[in-house]
Length: 149
Figure 1 (cartoon, rainbow, N blue to C red):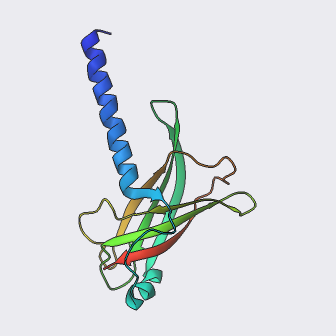
Figure 2 (cartoon, rainbow, N blue to C red):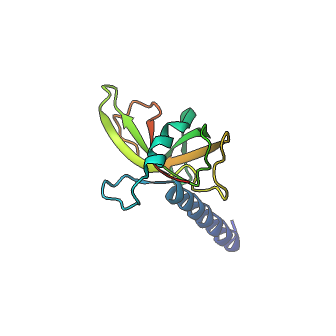
Figure 3 (cartoon, rainbow, N blue to C red):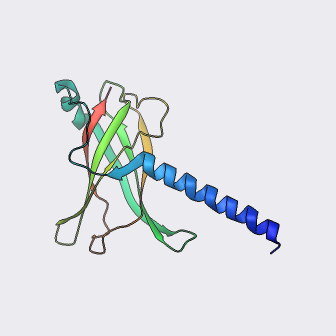
């Protein structure tokens, strides 16, 4: 391969990695118990059951570096009467004995320009670079923990 082609290939690879990492950081972050966010109002707390998660599926792919990247794809439906502009969920992964092995926080609406309207469903994807070896390979439980109208 000529030297100039290697430089272009390297730039393309760096760009792709940057896009993947940016997407991952926008949608997923490690759970932190002391994270600062405004307290939920009584109305927001009561609205949580109006958010339904469906079609959760796990997949994996090997990236160009040979590392395995794991994905959670799913849908969230707003079954309530208010538009939701921000949503934070807790993802809990377990082992074959149903013991918690990984807890992460994700923001399934992070890539949206508009709020999730009543009756609307949107797809989301969360990426994970490292999964515990003893994870049971099943999708996590998804629990909404924060929202804003």
